[in-house]
Structures are given as structure tokens and as C-alpha cells.
Figure (cartoon, rainbow, N blue to C red):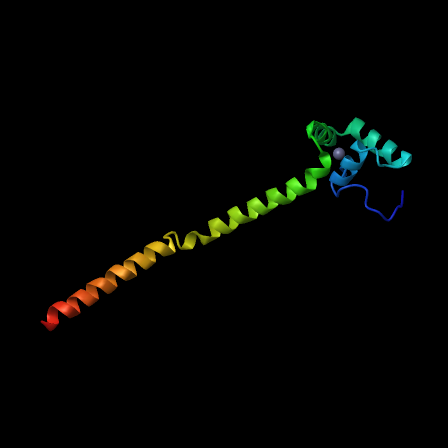
Length: 111
Ligand SMILES: [Zn+2]
């Protein structure tokens, strides 16, 4: 394995890609040994690996993660838009009612 490649997360844990490649048996023997040793000592990474093992296809994990991030972002945007809690349709309805009242009063007082 190349040394300039970051093999662990800043907290010292295995990356998602490493776990996926480990499950898919796509690692060099030396890296696989490192990961196996880490999994012996680290409950967090071991549980993450067990979670991935229950998935039908761990390779879809990044797509699922992207979708979750996207949903969280949209929820965040929705919360931000609460400055205007009334929907634009209600604003439009109020403007139309006011317009009808103005037109009616113009028609009524011209008589
Ligand atoms: Zn770990």
C-alpha cells in the first residue's frame, strides 16, 4: 500500500471505502491484515462492518449516503424558508379578494 494514501479517518477509524473493499475482498494482503487488526480492537468499525454485511449490496452505500445528505439538505432549506410560513397561494388569494373589494367599491360609488 502507498504511504501517501490516507488509510484512516482522522479519528483513527477505517473509511467507508476501506470497509466496502474489505467486504468485497478487493484489498492487498498487507492492507487486509491492517484492517483485520484494526477490527479486533475497534468496536465502532466492527459494528459498521457488521451493518454493511447485512446490506444486499454494500457498494450502494455511497448512493444511499448521498441520498440521505440530499434529504437532510432539503429539510434544512425547508426550515430556513419558515420566515414566510404562509404559502404564496394564500398571499395571492388575499390580493385577489382585496382587488375584488376595490373593484366592487369603485362600481358601487360610481352609481
Ligand atoms: Zn475504528
